[in-house]
Each structure stands twice: as structure tokens, then as C-alpha cells.
Length: 83
Image (cartoon, rainbow, N blue to C red):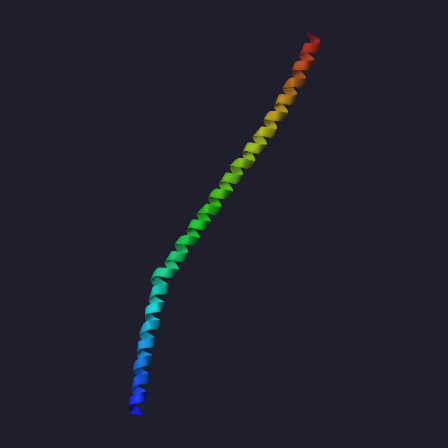
């Protein structure tokens, strides 16, 4: 009976050691790696937002250019009618 209890205690010590090793692996390797990946995704999101902002500004500029071109065409027509 005592030998069985001692075997169980030995087995429990081994399990505790394995669990402690797993906890250290999670704390020292897995969590930092997850953090690194998450930071990389945040950077990608920021870069995408910046790219979309530039694209929106480009579209606004194209609209302004088209508007100005149309106004210049109207002004040319008025000048041609006067001359």
C-alpha cells in the first residue's frame, strides 16, 4: 500500500514538473510570439488605413480636376463667343 502511494506521489511530482515546464513555455515562448504577431497585424491595419486615406484624397483631387476642366471649357466658350 505504501509503495503504491509512493508511486502515485512520484507520478504527481512528474506531472507537476511537466505542468511547470508547459507554463514556462507558454509564458516565455508562446505569449511573446502571439504578441509579436498581433503587433504586426496592427501595423498592417494602420498601413491599410493610410493607403485608403491616400486613395480617398486621390479621388477627391480627380473630382476637383474634372470640375476645374469643365469650368475652363465653359470659360473658353464664353471667351470664344466674345471674341
